[in-house]
Image 1 (cartoon, rainbow, N blue to C red):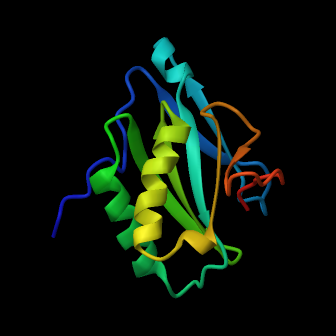
Image 2 (cartoon, rainbow, N blue to C red):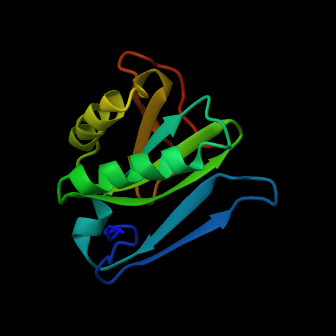
Amino acid sequence: MPRRRGLRPRLPAAVVRSRATSAFAAERQVVIQTADPRMQEMAQLVLQFSPWASGEFDRLVALEDELIAMLSEQAIVDGHDMGSNEANIFIHTADPQTTLQECVQVVGKLGLLSLLSAGHRPLGGNRYVRAWPRGDESSFSVK
């Protein structure tokens, strides 16, 4: 079985924690406390696939493994979640646009490009900016 590297990044002098905003909310807020200025420049890129059947967990993990294997060193796959007819893969990166282009190649190769939406935000931020599909100006959110 291949080693799944990169799932839990070691971030220097950083404390990262998630908390739900209410009992029913799936939205996460990431709180970063760090003295390292490089961490302030990191972003969270979210690859969102919809519609996504709950029975396709193995397909999501296979996609995540492909991304871990091919992403440059500036990006770390942080995990995934499923629910509300969608699946999300979370990636920490210093360059969300370049990382997205690398991801689009893998997603296209696996035939999932028609299901893909993507957005990014600063790691400590609350508002996402839609990054895919290009030209789509609608808001992006994680359910």
